[in-house]
Length: 216
Ligand SMILES: *Cc1c(COP(=O)(O)O)cnc(C)c1O
Image 1: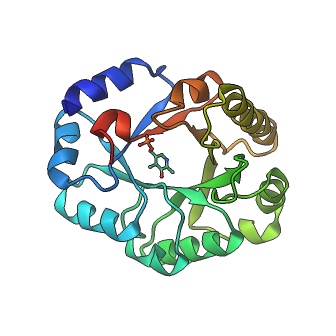
Image 2: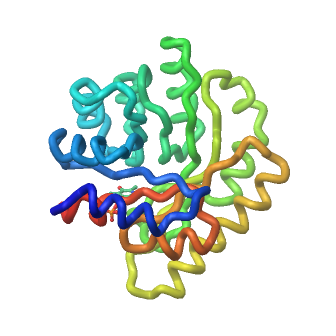
């Protein structure tokens, strides 16, 4: 497994405006350091405790992204360092992030997760819920969070047409939403198996794990 090569190959597929999050969940710090030494600085994890352990061991100029489903009672453990939280899917969670960010005198960047997949197992809010949340007065009181965009995961399927439709629907919604909420800049869509489709359909941030680090 040549991580530097995989990273280079992945990056060569990305247009300039697309940010690469290297998803390092389950991988040891030595493996992450190989990617770090090859120049990668943004890493994604899906478990808070695992991310905290890696944050404490690894170089401090790494930007850590939380990409997994959030347990509200664990937000406090990452509030002092997390760079971007991708999977926010309720006002209650935003409120908790705001509360913990305030304690550290930080503003934490968040993406709202939209449910675009047909599976019950994928978390996220409906487009209407996202619209309502963004226009609510309650969210304006959250001074220590910054909602910078949306995140979505496609259905796990071999049907490329379906994946394409899910991504393009989310992109159309995102483009529309930005008119009223210009602070939304990031559309996090695409993983190892589908990031080229995601990029062709408006993604500005891809979360790639196995294509860089090998299977888990
Ligand atoms: C694991 C994970 C990824 C990366 O998946 P790969 O198929 O290994 O690229 C991306 N996004 C989320 C939310 C994940 O949990």
